Image 1 (cartoon, rainbow, N blue to C red):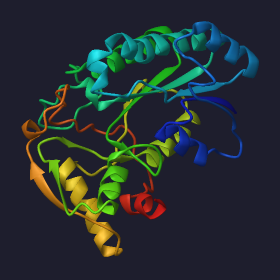
Image 2: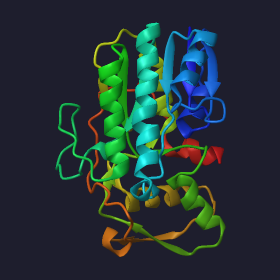
Image 3: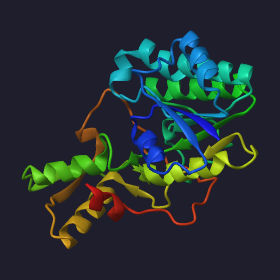
Length: 276
């Protein structure tokens, strides 16, 4: 199977590359190789490599910055996705596109289903929702996977930030305790995507997260509990309210997604920490 992976330098992109099946031939691209806001570049890439499936992990993910860079966020997260979707439809290619829990407003009291109505609070969330709708409208073989709170051994993420602070000698850190979600290892999502590509398209909108529901504070506690057990650097963690850390974006207070997919043997937090 020939697969075009867009956004190969992302956490998820790198985790996919680590798990590529032997029968796949992967063309991996970064923003330096392929500008998804340029429809001509996308068409040329498809004509040259003739992929059977495109996995798009590329996105504008600077959530706070998006509030003052709305045009750029929508250019990448909406227009770019539309360009990919249109090219896939023309060439009869399957598209797997990654979205986010930020399409919801966080006012729910139980996990969000794929049938629940989105109501994003931020420019980032609105741009990602627009990308979902455009992918579904313009590519009949498109599938959307929403996920949340990704972390991995790659890139910038919460787990790596916590460990860096501990290694820098921080004795105590404050972490918000009133935002609830599901931390998700990007490697597990990568495995889900790989398995999905080998199956017929049934549902076009899916959710995948790891199973643990917790606050950022509880996640930090889990990280440092493991570090302490392994005699690694760790910090004491103090819970605080989000209001004590104002940001340009109001984040969903509750963004738990009800997973559509069950992974047989998901990897856990200790796997990632051991790789850092």
